[in-house]
Image 1 (cartoon, rainbow over the protein chains, first blue to last red):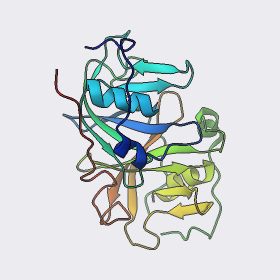
Image 2 (tube, each protein chain N blue to C red):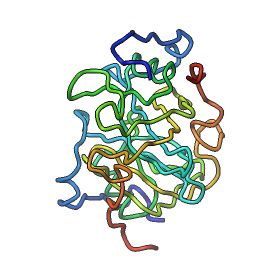
Image 3 (cartoon, chains in turn cyan, orange):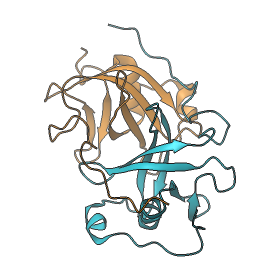
Image 4 (cartoon, rainbow over the protein chains, first blue to last red):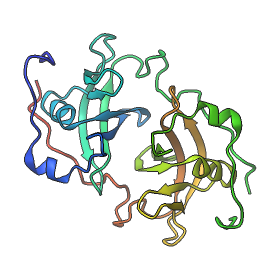
Length: 124
Length: 124
């Protein structure tokens, strides 16, 4: 695995031209388990995070709280090997299919949505 | 199906207290096919869109371009019957599992990500 701070990553110009980032320069990125199809988590990417993810095939995001690039699992070991990356029809959402090592959620749950269902209204 | 303009929807106080909306009062909502597990699309919800989705079990979002509540499929017929709704660990992302009628994408593609994979770096 290439150390995250060893180099910088630059996004391909064609991909950059299709990205529609928000006013903070970020796009939401959905990580889905490539095997089971479970949606694992949602995090944010800036251009460099997307470039790093494409180059290294390791799920890499932008931490809004720490304001730094963040390779998922760098400290926990719960890394994401990237099988595919897709940009949606209007270029403002990214979908990653990943091989998730260990739990995806920082709480230790398998996904950030595990056991967190809300109550629906009566079926009609 | 209850007409969208027939009533207003108010979010349960407990759910509201767990929601962490962005500065525009919105949270990203991921729609996943309940049967196949495919990620169909990502859209945005405000409190009322979430309340309407929970109450009616029809995928309902906030249109940022039109600045109005938007029931998916209201004009196209490509509705989303909601099987479950979950709020993630830190309350800033929603995951819907839905029964999607017809294509999910406004382009007519099955999902907003269909055939839109980006090129990855060399496997290492």
